[in-house]
Length: 96
Image (tube, rainbow, N blue to C red; front, side, top):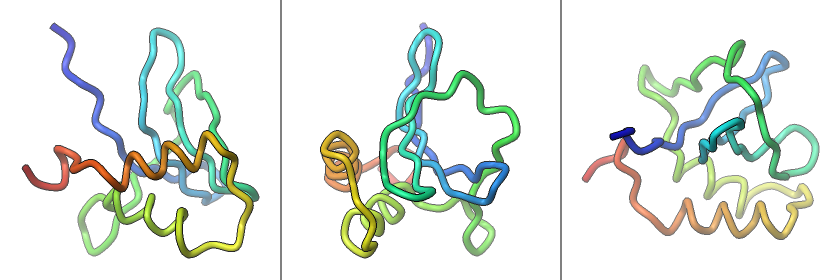
């Protein structure tokens, strides 16, 4: 049985954070935060590095909450719905 995918925050080659939250058969689904906040599909995670905050992986809920509430950027409807879902649920990497 395949283990469930754990969402995480990664940094792309240009220094922009991506919130990777889904894995399908061919693509990873992510929220890109470069200019506007939108959903994108990635074919590979090669070249992406983990976002580190005080020696720990950056919390997905913290990143989702920040982009949902504290940026003046435009957010697409689907990206807003996904961000709300990430903020609302407790993720396995952040505790119980």
